[in-house]
Image 1 (tube, rainbow, N blue to C red):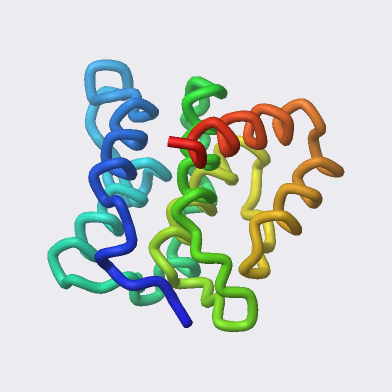
Image 2 (image 1 turned 135 degrees about the horizontal axis):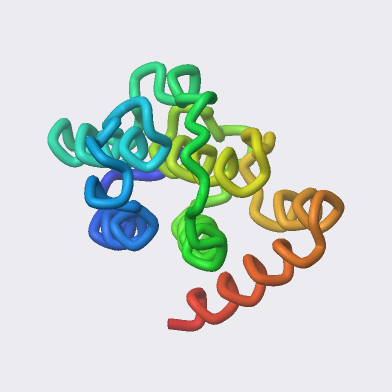
Amino acid sequence: MAIMIDEINLMEIFKDLGKICKTPEVCGTCAEKACLIGYARNCTAECRKANRTGVINGYANIPPADIRGGYDEYDVLHAIAHLLVQCRSCKEDHYDNCLINVVRSCLEVIEFGEEQKYEGEVLSYLMKILQLDPTKADIIKEEYMLHKER
């Protein structure tokens, strides 16, 4: 069964995205939906407002050409870990337009250059990231374990 809106800690997602955002002072004007962080924030706000967990065409509309760069790697990797803690591990019931999947995918574009296929299970995902980049996988895993204990 897919995740329910009351199972998602939207405030934590907003907080993590706020830490990552470079702000208009650094970027000039806010690119909003053309920025990966702006897009993720917009999707989160949309779900909060509509009281749902899915983003209509959310995965398909992730801005692939956001080349801003300069994001804090640890903040991004920690935010991915926090999303994994919130993930319900839906397995067969996983769907790409789930808010957690959309936001995590935006962060993956920042960290890995593209979205990583997620099959609805945290352990499989971590194993895939380990093959892609062991150092980043270790950071995500460590923060995941610390955050899961809280």
